[in-house]
Image (cartoon, rainbow, N blue to C red):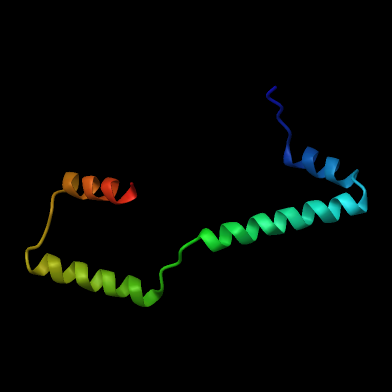
Length: 79
């Protein structure tokens, strides 16, 4: 069964739940958010600037690669 519900419809349904069920749902949502935040990797400003500097140095030194090779490298790193 493929059911579609709007966010407003979902909110209306949640409001009909008992307070204890709303608290349970809120806890589950917060737990899910914490897990996703822990999975998220952040790059510091210093790391970004170091990467840009390194790239510019490679470019000036003639260390370049084709776009196709770049894409292949990205795809292999993703695996």
